[in-house]
Length: 78
Image (cartoon, rainbow, N blue to C red):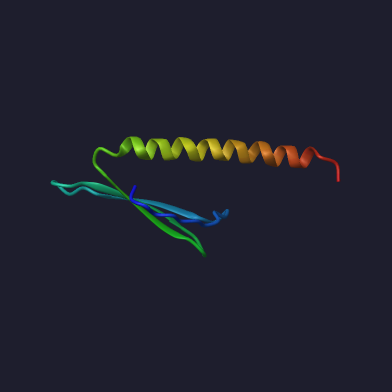
């Protein structure tokens, strides 16, 4: 990645769209994350599939941590 910093709040209605661009010389995939206040497009070229897998693994880990935090918060008496 080349020096980019982005932030946004994912919501329940955030849309995710994958669009393949099967060009013979330089195929790539666009991964878009779209919502009311966020629009991020990640362009991933051939040979970068492991970077997407790492991103997916980190997102899965973050979701598990969020689930655990939510469960802990509901166990605490008000």
